[in-house]
Length: 309
Ligand code: UDP
Ligand code: MG
Image (cartoon, rainbow, N blue to C red):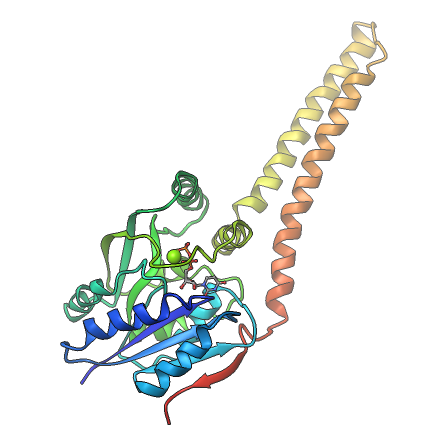
């Protein structure tokens, strides 16, 4: 019998774990697949890990990987993908915004021969206008800047064949934008659209800061355009100031009416100072990321693996 692994990162989701478990179990019961349900507890401070422990004690399908602290959604996902043993792996959020009722559809596509079945979020029922607009702009931006294509609205709700999972697992970078990596693994790829329902309970665990960091990971991970921008800004300023120098020489030696032009100088200096700082900032961002990567620290730390003996 073929085996499906579910990878579910959870962070303070005590109100959702039971409902999630119930609905996945209900969907899987009539299907003739073996399955494992891997919860990765990303350092929750509520009752999440206790609930996982109870479920794992009662049902051998369930396992838990408890992190020593909060490492973030992408690293929790990574842990699950590292440990999943199924012939196919389905990753999904634990807040039921990725409807378990779509699982048979994903599996059907897999059985047709697709190795990556990516879901595309057409809309989120309770998302704010702010989140919708920034998300749309972001995917436009990242697709303009990077050489690889990243599907707009792509979520981390997807099925991957064992071959694709093994390929993804060879990517060990720390700043991960998994949906970008998966988009560019190759393999036989297909998509399914869906409308994400509101969370079953609780509120989003992505703060604005976490969202921004994630967005930046996506851009710096897939594009060197910002670095090139700094170079072009320098080029434009350099050419501009050369023209300005010609003008200065003209005023001084030919038209002979040089005035004390402190305002021009001050303006030019502020402008150049700004451009220089921006350039250093962009370079610093990439250097910082090199620093993070070369340390080769573990991507996550598992405090405990919960599995029925
Ligand atoms: N999550 C996580 N670690 C974090 C933040 C979120 O494991 O630091 C989990 C969260 O519990 C949920 C999934 O990632 O299962 C998606 O998060 P959320 O629903 O808060 O994001 P949104 O749907 O609002 O983008
Ligand atoms: Mg959610």
